Image (cartoon, rainbow, N blue to C red):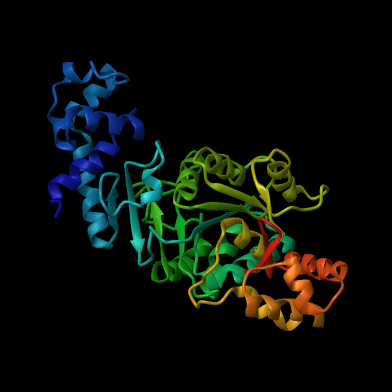
Length: 367
């Protein structure tokens, strides 16, 4: 069990002016521990690459310790969990990122190491098209029990969090400010629901304002916590494209919902697709297929609920695959007593509907 003294030192280390996350970790590695950093002499600190006289003086002065002690009282009072990058409980995916936050603060009941974490981001000025697309995608992947991560902002973020909650999913909001406030204030009630069905994460201490410079930093946490990022609607400039680019640098999958070339808030999505920074998805089935999800929490693929909308011939193909399992087109033709051209057309329709997928060797499988 870590002591209060150790926690104060950890928090204080993240508050030293001019020292970012990468340099903090280098200091700890060089000195041997957090406590050793503060115990080191100024002239020896200056010898560490990228540590100048100003930074070294700030470290030995220990001015940040009083502020860290105040922050410790705050997080203890509000049952906020501090997660240091060396802790076992620190999110594994975020550990993989070189510029990950040295410390994050977490309040909630959700699992930050969830099996299927997906980020959903986009413009604050979301249109009805974006709201519908966001909701349909989250509704469609809900049977796989994903964790939905976003930034608790207006627009797409709010839609994503609400859709997750409505589907009984955990959802995490990553904040660009301290945990002593919610921004925007209109999302106070939503944030309260999320704490009970997911949680809130930030790298910023209390009393940190939601300044613009904080949000690009926030976006790297959104990308780092997840296996994939979905951009619903975005202009050519903004946080959603920043998040997508960071996700690409982290080797995360990036997907975008396309839109009309005349729509302002589809320009960013179309650009990501056009420049191969994101894969095009139209619905949940596209995402499920791309990520290779096969067995949801209830043991049934979500597309099964679409079977009632299938034509007679489509239902026949599904029945064959349910009975036989993975099957070649020749097997399906033989069992269906239909012309091969008709079978090929029906199978293509089923692919478009996200009910089946084509495997190597022209073998078909129910999703």
